[in-house]
Amino acid sequence: MAIDRKQSVVYAASKSFALFGYKATTMEQVAKLANVGKGTIYTFFKNKEELFDEIVTRMIREMTDAAETVIDSSRPFFENAQAAIFRILEFRTEHQLMLKLVQEQQLGTTAVQEVLVRVEEEILTYIKNKIEIAISKKEIKPCNPELTAFLLFKMYIALVYDWEKRHEPLSEEKIAELIELYFLRGLSQ
Image (cartoon, rainbow, N blue to C red; front, side, top):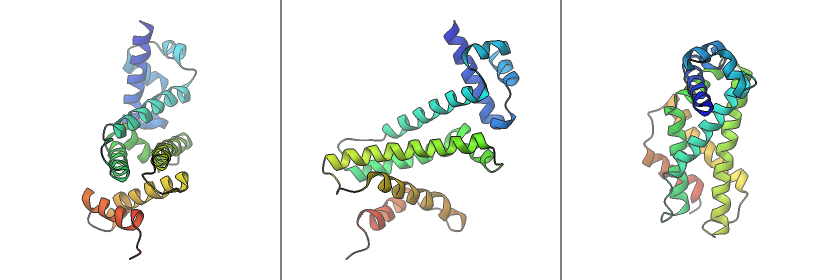
């Protein structure tokens, strides 16, 4: 029974944060959406920040689970890396809460900015771990996994989001081709 209530509170809060954003969501709204008393929320969470943290933690888990679904052990590392990063970026554009957080970030909400930094750190850690595994399996040359994860992820973001601000969107295949050309093979003859 208590777990059902907690799940109901988390679901209602997720819905509220996705619809109204962090700043505009109140514990009263969450209680109303969850069909519980406001005090019930406080039996599970100390405050709105703790409730938000729970939801963000679950969202990050969903995001990494989504990335794992496209990993195929029979494919080379870079094909899996590309598929996983694409899936993460798709998740970010499909998930209602992520969309709202990105919108609210522009308003300068500190809690939201901190969450988006945390999400990016989790993505980079995920990629770094995959790079470390690939290095240990000798699938790729030894390199700085943290720096490589950062560069790979930022290149994807630049090609997927930043490029589209002034140009026609690139296809997934074209992005993969460019990543291979500039990042994986380099420009040397």
